[in-house]
Image 1 (cartoon, rainbow, N blue to C red):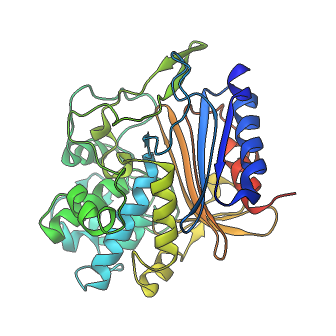
Image 2 (tube, rainbow, N blue to C red):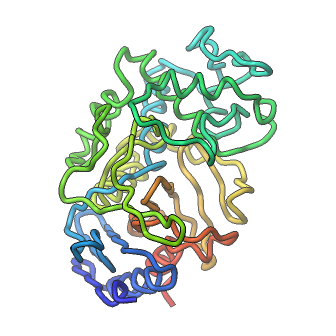
Length: 356
């Protein structure tokens, strides 16, 4: 594949460069992906790597600070904002969501009185998903309330606290919780509390109806009937606080670095985020906390991470204590695999944390 032969690495911390370069190129070639871009960060020292193209129609290479859809990486920003509110005494993790959003979460078999804030953030609420794989993405902007109403028409997945199932509805509700407690839209509050103070100048929530990406941006692609389709234009409001954020590898690596340094939430709240349950659906070695995933790599290193998948974009940010942060995006969702070992993001993690 020609795209796999086009590889770029610029480095301020050069020891990772060959591994990063090879991991990106191998993943792009193996999975027939349009391209991938990654940043390895040790505070202000960055290694940037890319393979393939950000636009296959024009053979455009990835530029520094390339905008992508961060997808479910959004959830870590949302959870961190809720944990800031916990530190301020405005919300208690083990209090029911009914206490904060009285009368809002109603549906057959759904008990908001038995569902805590912690269970929402850790995907233990049992609430139904608002969309499934067969649901078409709405053409017009939708609100968080509309997304929640769609979910509440469905039965619960299990009683609260009895299992764990990754569900976007939980973070739509977390966004409504932020709005209720602060009096501001969740996107504005996250921007005020996290994005702006950290200087994440390339990170933003699209306004309703803004279905494109700011330049420079990577195009996202999907395979439809065996043909590659550009799906960059996307109604981000359909992802809401579960996945609408736009960012760059530079910014998300800076965010996860600050988070694990307790510069986003204080140490007691960070410990809450890192208190996990096994995430069995993701496979062995995966543990979900409050908007953070603990991932145990084969070499014995645990990294704290969050992935993101949305039409055309397959992303991950991760950091191990005492090690660098890494953020990577591939611009097409790869073939489904039952093993994380075959996920292209795993190749980048192993290149950074488990070099041969």
